[in-house]
Amino acid sequence: MQKTIKHQFFFPNPPEVVWEYLTKAELIEQWLMPNDFQLILGYDFRFVVKPMPSLDLDGIAYCKILEIVPFRKLTYSWKAGPGEGKISLDSIVEWTFVPKDNGTELQLVHSGFKEIENFNIYTAMDNGWVKQVGIINSLLIK
Image 1: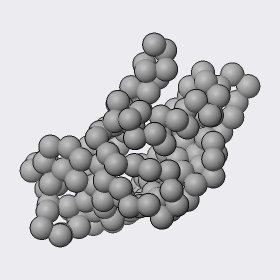
Image 2 (image 1 turned 135 degrees about the horizontal axis):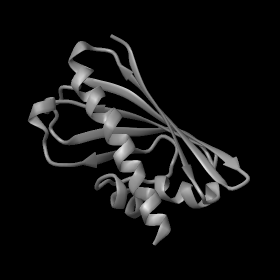
Image 3 (image 1 turned 45 degrees about the vertical axis):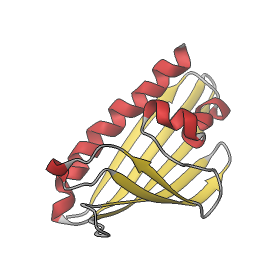
């Protein structure tokens, strides 16, 4: 099994505004989850939520920033598992910002769902990304 999540979102805002919501810890927390994100190449950070036993996840995503191209691209690893040091999901999240005349197209590619045990996580995250990124739009309208 090799699955990749791909979505495109549109924001009626310039890339610099959308970029803030993906690169500032306090803004990321408003639409995604608590984190200790810092925009530093090679920086290790975590996303933390309640454990999700139905997905065999302990609620911690271990991430590392792999690529930063300001206002154009942000890539980080996303590793998670049931706990006790076991990683069952080893994936990559890539955000690409495409300036448009009337705003920004944000492209998401989340790859690395390789194992059959990742199928339920893939399904949950595929729908989850759409829901969570939609929150950014509502925050930008305020």
